[in-house]
Amino acid sequence: MTQRVRGLPDLPRCLVMGVVNVTPDSFSDGGAFADADSAIKHGQELLAAGADLLDVGGESTRPGAERVTAAEEWRRVGPVVSGLAAAGARVSIDTMRAETAERALAAGAVMVNDVSGGRADAGLPRLVAAAGVPYVVMHWRGHSTSMQSKASYADVVAEVVDELRRSVDDVCAAGVAEDQIVVDPGLGFAKNAAHNWELLARLSELSVLDRPLLVGASRKSFLGQLLADGDEPRAVRDRDDATTAITALAAAAGAWGVRVHEVRGSADAVRVVAAVRGTT
Image (cartoon, rainbow, N blue to C red; front, top):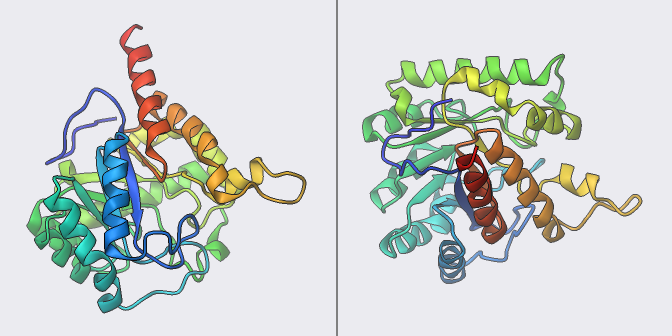
């Protein structure tokens, strides 16, 4: 699959996107970095650990999460986006709203990560097209309050590919150029653990989309289930080693990038994979 994305570095390895959640209710670190100063400091720590990009979000998309208003989303992320951009970070804004994305781009963000793949706000693909910035188009079947009820597939990989292809076609019809687009299979979004593992096992099949691939498995519940002690899932913050393992697998499968909460392990993993691939 092609790996070149307009406006982003074309590195000889998988990129690492560090997550900066500015929310009180995200599944992994909700509330830990809910004020601007702590979120900016955390982002700088992720950069120092090897992050190539920082993905700043102000609205939780965990299963069951309720939406926040655009005003509240911007109150959370605005100072963080501007602060990290001023510090030299490449900032991605994690939002489904054109209004938030527009303000974030004006504040220094250079990329839009839209978990709805252009389906939550028709104005967002048009904004991205006009701005000419990179755009992550994720596989999505609905908002967090209802998405898990839609986790039904005959062949999860084939259906995700077909639905992602339609989303890519739709955002291109809105004016987005192909070289702006990164695709994301949406692990955990309208998918159960078996669906996530199947997608990871068959990542190479997403190459038919001929777009760079972003994988976001970090700390998700299917890892907690795998590592459970009896009936008790592994605690969220104790899933980073498993996340690093998936980073290595994704990089070896040709993924363009991974989106992770703990950067150091994944930054090491992508460099190891690149070294091994460079010797074959």
